[in-house]
Amino acid sequence: MIKLFIIDDHQMIIEGIRTLLKDEVDIEWMGSAKLPDELMGFLKHKQPDILLMDINLPQKSGLDLCKEIKEKYPAINIIGLSTSNQASVIRKMQENGASGYLLKDASKREIITAIHEVNKGKQNVNFSVAEILKSKTPNNELPALTRREKEILDLISEGLTNQEIANKLFLNITTIDSHRKNMLTKFNAKNTAALIKIAMINNLI
Image (cartoon, rainbow, N blue to C red; front, top):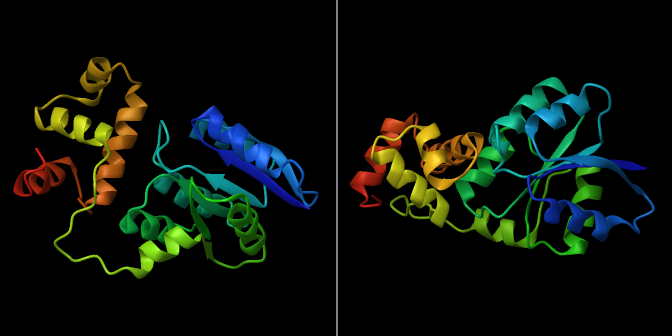
């Protein structure tokens, strides 16, 4: 029996995955969490075989969370589950210990296959991700920003703090921090100043 847990801050995704897997007799649904703190609290008492992990999380980026969990609980196999189709993000997730990566439009068959393959100790990505990793992105081609990331980047460039941005956009400060960290990863920027410099040079702001 493969014990499965999922962390995602969208209840619809959690319920969708649970519905897809409900008839799989060899997969045991252990539960779900929306916040990294909730997940870490659960892992102190029980550990799943497979952890499906969203990347854009409140409190902490899934990239950082993946690395932290693999250091504390190396036996847990992590599969990234995200809307991000940036090769740099996928590779960073793999570097941080993930054994698999699925886009959220993955089919039921792809999800189940990934769970079984990763549980056997293998690496697995679905077809869309494999195509992204195979394609050679020109060095001068920048990763795309989501509408929300662009909005937050503009406000960062204006000198607003995370708290000020959160207040302006009516979002939680941890969500803003997560977006900021994801953008640092996307552009391989060491800090916010470097991120702003890259954005200005490439007319992103």
